Image (cartoon, rainbow over all chains, first blue to last red; front, side, top):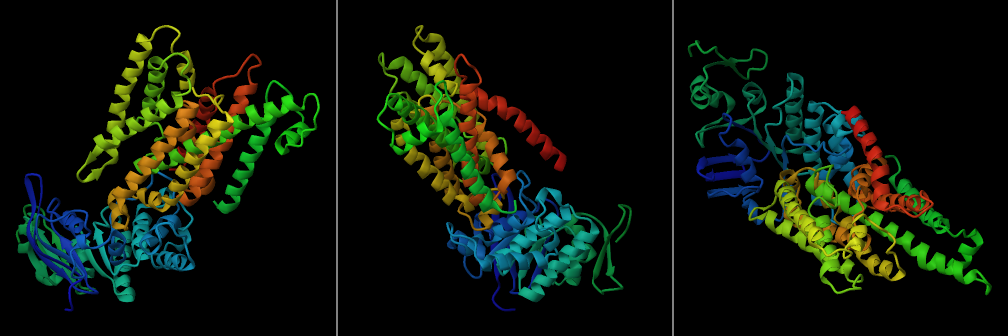
Length: 265
Length: 334
C-alpha cells in the first residue's frame, strides 16, 4: 500500500466525562474503499468529524495526506476531502442543481463568479449520480434516495480525492442502498477516489468494501478484508448479536445473517 | 427561475416606477410637466413653479427615496438573518435590534432636553447596535456562535428591553413621548434630503457587503458542520453577516422607526422569483423590498383623506395575507 490518505494513531476523544474513542489506529490507502463498522454510539461519526477537522482529538495523531487537519486552510482542505452526511437543507427552496454547485466553493474565489469549468464539474457530478433529469427539481420535491445521491453529487463536484461518508444509506430502501454503493464503486474506478464509509450495512459493506474496521468499546477490535473481519465471534463481541456468516453464492462475498436470540453460533 | 438577470432588471424598473408614482401622490396635485420641470431644474420662472418644485424635491422625492432605502435594506438584512439562522421565520428584528432601537429612541425622548428630536435617530441606532452586540457576545462560546444560542439570547435580551420600554412609558411625564411612540410605529415622514444623504452610504455599503458574502450565505444553508466541511470559514462568515445585517437594520430603523413585515416577507417573495442563490437573492430582495415599501407608503398616504396611516400598519396589513398565501403554497408542495 502506498502512503495512506487517512491515518489515525492512538486517537482518543471524550465528550465531557464520557470517553468515546480510547486509542483508535487505522489507515486508509489511496484508491481504497474502507468501511467503518460498529454499534450505535461507538464513535464512528466522531472519528469522521475528527478527520474532517470539526473536532480535535484529545490525544493521538490524525493525518490527511500526511498532515494534521488543523494545519490546512479551510478551502485547501475542502479540495482534498469531502464529506457526505445526512443533513440536507430543505428549509429553503433550492434546486438540485444549485445544491450540487455549492460543492465548487473551494475552487472559486469567495467573491468571484461561476465559470464554465464550474458548470462542467457540476454537470459531470449530476450525470455520474444519475440526477441529470432532476436538476431543476427542488430538494424538497425528490425522494430520500435521490436526496442522498444529491449529497454525493455535491461531494463529487467538490473534486476531492478523499471522501468521508457518514451512514449515507441509513434511511434508504434496498434499491437505493445498492445504487448508492454502486456509485461509490464507480467513483473509485473512474476517479480514483478513496472513501471511508461509516455504516451499519454489514452485508453490503462486505460486498463493496475492500477493508473493514470494526469499532468496539472505543477501539478498532478487528480490521482487514471483509471475510477476515466479518466472522461470528467479532460480530457478537461488537454488536452483542449472534449471526451466521457464509458466502453469497452469486458474488462470493461474505454474507452476514442475524440469528434469533435463541440461535447458536 | 429561468432568467434571473431579467427579473432583477424588471424589479429595478418597478422600483423606479414606484418612486415616480410617489412623486404624483399627495394632497397637492402635480402635473407630469411640473414634476419633470422640478427634477430637471428647468422650472420656468412663474407663479406656482417654486411651490411645486419644493413639494416634489423637498418632500416627495426624499420620502420616496427613504422608502426605497429602508425597504431595500430591511429586505436584504432579512435575507441575511434567514440564512444566518437557517430559519425562514427570521427577520432583521429577531435578535434585539428593534427593542434596542426602541429603548434608544425612548431614552432620547425622555432624557434629552426639550426640543431634542434631532438626536433620536442617533440614539435609536446606538440602542440597536448595543442590543445586537449584547446578543452576539452572550451567545458566543469558545467553539463559536450557535444559531440556537443566538435565538435564545435574542429572546432574553428582547424581553429585558421590552420590560425597559414599558417602564419608560409608564414612568414618563405626560406629553414627553408621543413623538417617540409615533416613531415606533414606523414612519417615512422623516425623509429629508439630508437624512437620505446620510443613510445612503450606509445602506449601499451594507448591502454591497451582504452581496459579497453571498457565497458564504449559500453555504450557511447547509448547516454549520457541512458548510465547514465544504470549505467555509463558518465562524468568520457568521460574525461578518451578523454585524453587517444588524447594523444595516439598525441604520434604517433609526431613521424610519419599526416598519415590520418587510424584512420577513420580501425575502420569501424574492426567493419565489429568483431562487435561493444569494448572488441573485440579495439584489432581488433589495429591489423588491424597495418597491414594496414605496408602494405601501403611497397607499398609506392616499387611503385616508383626513391624514395618513403609519406605513408600518400598511406593510403588516398587506403583508400578513401574502405571507399566509405563501405558507399555504409551500405546505402544498411538501
